[in-house]
Length: 200
Image (cartoon, rainbow, N blue to C red):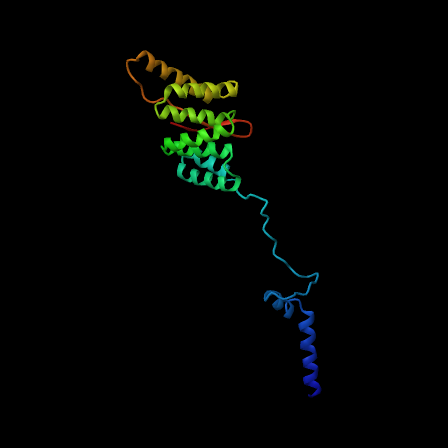
């Protein structure tokens, strides 16, 4: 081997051992050991503890803008992330109600109340479902419960109760005409507040 060839072979060998992007990197890609140096750049890992976008919050915004089908999908995503807790169940029930699926809405909201009987939004929204389904007597009882649990703080719940009482009295005393359906308000839990989502 000539001096020139020997010199070139030595330079190539040294470059391969010292270069972090050389054989060490290839070996690492193939599953072998890599050379750890201070100038290597690693991509950050995914933090699975962080939930990403809050499906409930997105769903609430979609409900407020009348996008009920998209809201339902967002609430289902929240259920897969958080589990079927009372907030998620109440939201799912409200979205189903807005889509006119009264049977599903009633079933889901009853499940929410089984989990937490003191959860005011689920109580109120179940009352709205019952009114829509023509179960006026039960709706009135549910609104009374929601109003008591809320201590009368929420205007929408108070108005819902008034409408339920007026409608039930018309039914009992045989009001001359049944007026158009009263506007009922859905509510959700916000940051300490109950926020109007939709009116029927």
